[in-house]
Image (tube, rainbow, N blue to C red; front, top):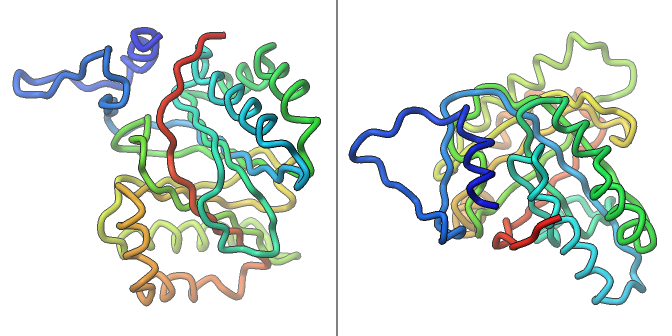
Length: 255
């Protein structure tokens, strides 16, 4: 299974020098697959599980979702509970984050029988609400597969009604500048959502990945620089969803 993943990602890999560290396929938790600057597709789904759902059914659903990481189209996939929701107006409880090398691969994943089975048999019966966004991440540098234990901050923005497309570059520029204000981070991606059907009107999204929760919490303890960038576009935004997610350990599965 891991060998397949490495082959799928090989087209992104720069040549290894003699001093480069090589990772053992027998130790999935130690794998850090790096890529040269390239373009990938980010896919994020937020879920609100029904309050009365039995924990065993939630576990079975998450297991099914994480098992989809074995599909050929998928570069990375993880699903689990949201660590912290900073937007109380939205009651999402779980999140899925995945990456693909092209929009065609994302489409192939979405229509794959295994994915459809998990959605129909395990997800739909326990789901109250969901929201999904997709964007093109240009010039991603770093690991395609975030390290287990990494802390991820997701931000999704909805523009005020009546604003034209000419305002979007200004917002994207401000989001890009925020990363320069951050200290210890692994990577950040951002872009315009290209799948509006399930996005509830939200059109811009970003993911920032930190080595762990300590680094993410350090950001919250010194928010002045980030807030300065946000103030530049505050008048353009109607609503913002912000939540934190911790990447779970990889799951061994085959479909």
